Length: 292
Image 1 (spheres, rainbow, N blue to C red):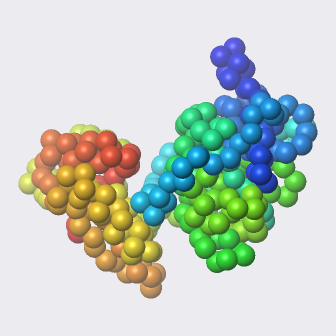
Image 2: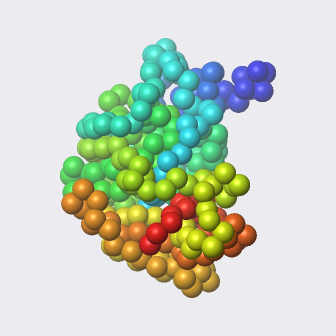
Image 3: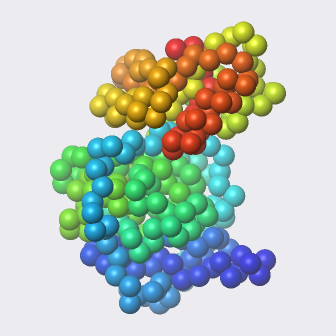
């Protein structure tokens, strides 16, 4: 308990040009990316926030793929209080659809713990939200220019004014939000990619996973509505030495999806080996599939 209280440090981020952060709720992990430009308890206000000195090539960074993940152990307590105001966490992201203002946070918080205790990585497509369960997946669309991006919500905030969502640096660049610091956006929750109609998968192959000894299986690392995103991920796998990576086209609810999968492989040892290869290059939750 004393450790958790000690973790409740001052941390919220605000982005118009220099994000700042208010105190995280004492009953949750520190929130890294919950903007508040004014108010008490700001985190290191003498330190300016911003982007990296050398902007990354965001075209080489794949968007996250909605995954069936358990709720984070941290950051989902409801209700919680920040700056004297109480907030409730939604029981589910299903059906969530809202419009509001997006902001972003960058170098000042890179590597710091988010509300879910995952380290904030400004080079991944992630976001902070006040009420969506952690983690959740949403599509954010910039209403000024029509650009959109899928982000994984793993943090709490923003708690400044009418701001709806706080984006990671690369997500802000993808949407063009980093230039002015804020933008009007639409946020729509995404259900995990039609997983209900596909075989169950596990974060690690275990004896209770129904895999016949001689049954060939695939490990899926992503499913994309944008074919170019699928091609970038496929190229990343091939460049990393995974030669059996393939792209499969599927139709779901009338929409084309491009699924990137590795395999087929047979047997638990081969599945485990391939999964570790994928995890080593940045795909922590490859999904076990029994068909192409």
